[in-house]
Amino acid sequence: MLITERDKLSSEIGALADRLGRTRSSLIPMLQEVKRTHHVIDSFTMQIVADALEIHPVEVHSVASFYAFLGTEKQGEFVVRLCRTISCDLADKDAVARQLQTNLGIGFGSTTADGKFTLEWANCMGMCDQGPALLVNDRVFTRVTPEKVHEILADCRRSFGVFAPEHKEEHLV
Amino acid sequence: MITSTVGPLTFSQIEPEAGLKAALAMPRADIIAEINKSSVKGRGGAGFPLGMKWNFAAAEQSAEKFVICNADEGEPGTFKDRVILTEFPDLVFEGMTIAGRAIGAKNGIVYLRAEYTYLRRQLEDTLAKRREQGLLGKNVLGRDGFDFDIRIQMGAGAYVCGEETALIESLEGFRGEPRNRPPFPVNTGYLGRPSTVNNVETLADAACILAKGADWFKSKGTEKSTGTKIFSVSGDCEKPGVYEFPLGISIAELLAAVGGAGAKAVQVGGASGICVPAAQFSRKIAFEDVPTGGSIIVFAPGRDMLQVAHNFLDFFVDESCGQCTPCRGGNAKMLEGAEKLREGTLTLAALDELKELAETMRIASKCGLGQTSSNAFMSIIENFGDEIMARALTQSEPARN
Ligand SMILES: Cc1cc2nc3c(=O)[nH]c(=O)nc-3n(C[C@H](O)[C@H](O)[C@H](O)COP(=O)(O)O)c2cc1C
Ligand code: SF4
Ligand code: FES
Image (cartoon, chains in turn blue, brown):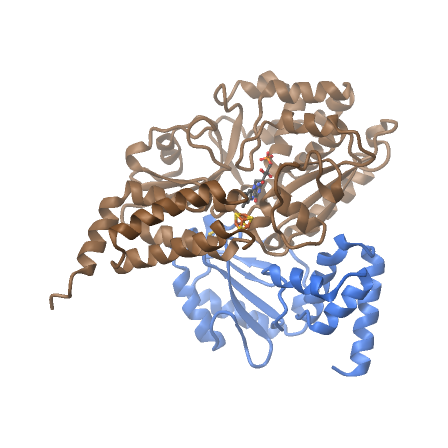
């Protein structure tokens, strides 16, 4: 990372800590914000966050690595999560899984070479009556079919760089 | 949308803020007395009496207390809290405010699961509106000295954080590892302060009880399981969705209402619940018979029950926090057993060992996750032994062609 980028990230995290409060309870909200905007919680970030909260960076690592929606790996701009739990399984999530892999050209747990998409499994996301269910960042898609996969991903591709953080969330049910 | 079978949906019959107004007009102790009289039990799954929980927290002397709403809804097959938060958010916040008054807390926190991030904006809007209307903030509804506000904190993708002490750990900025209990959250909760942790639906019910009285609430349900309950129904049925049923309804009656008659089995209570075979469909869904947080998953005759067990075990291996050995190691062993059963290579001796292991996990695991994670697999082995064993046998025979 360039020194200027590091400085920028440090001041961003500093501002975040000021806004959320420099207490341990702010740790997860801080990590969520960094993850949302930078798609990664790297060791530099962990050090700066640790400094801001006056804890050891290992503490930050231990928390980041515990939660499925945090983690320390670099992820794509769009994190695509397919539910693999029972009701979606009964609704043939496997067909959707195959289509996702074909369309993105990657397997589950990987990120496309251009850094745009990460494909992951997720556990029950509370849409069991409308499975198979899919989350793309914060947006939920239900009754997903292999044909719909194509539309959903094409939509993401069209809005690169704009959609992810700025999209106005709405309840799609 | 919530479909009700008990006449108009209970939640939509409640006059806005009637419960809060009633609560503010009575002494604090009377609020808890009314809740106690209703005998309402927690809707999150464990079924702990709500009045008792509030009473413990109210009895604590502390400069600060917290009311926590558990909106982590991670149990497979559960989605009713999402619908309640979408359609009746005011009722939930009203219930939290009543709880604040009852136990003497100034702060409420909603722990909302990361998967429901898309709900956050509208919930924040509802909170802002309540502040404008004087339903939150300083001197709630003009009541001198009663200040109460609510904030939302997001989860980060961990089923175990629905367990109340793990939830508190997560709120405090730690890994979601359940704590030993006691001490219970009502004594030592968030930031070491007395805290009540309640399910979304329980809090909405509290508002209804204060609005319409304990006797009205008790007029539905059974003696030990009072009131109606919101169910999440999915799987092989014609009309999956969210339903209101009285507690005490039999599984057969429920199936008839959702178009699931003819099912071979029903998973009640999600992955940590039990798998009830057709022969037992006359059993009642109630805390005294088959308890549930509201998850109902229907399986049609053609379904492979071993695949179901396998899916649940995958889930638990993934979601175990890894803190204690019976759960961390036990679930992995269970999964291995289910895989071998599918391949037809599990010996009967190994099966017996799995049953013993399940018992060890039930007794020795630290939290509810490890204590219940083998239930579904064991009830499937017990009730569908024929299906499972027959296959194991034929599949272990050498191929004939
Ligand atoms: C592994 C595990 C996960 C849980 N998940 C939830 C959950 O998502 N929502 C919930 O309300 N309760 C959940 N619970 C139960 C809570 O620990 C707690 O009993 C409940 O929030 C109390 O609220 P109630 O009395 O209003 O039901 C879970 C328990 C365990 C052991
Ligand atoms: S039972 Fe499982 S989830 Fe619960 S504390 Fe132990 S390892 Fe963690
Ligand atoms: S099982 Fe997929 S959303 Fe619940």
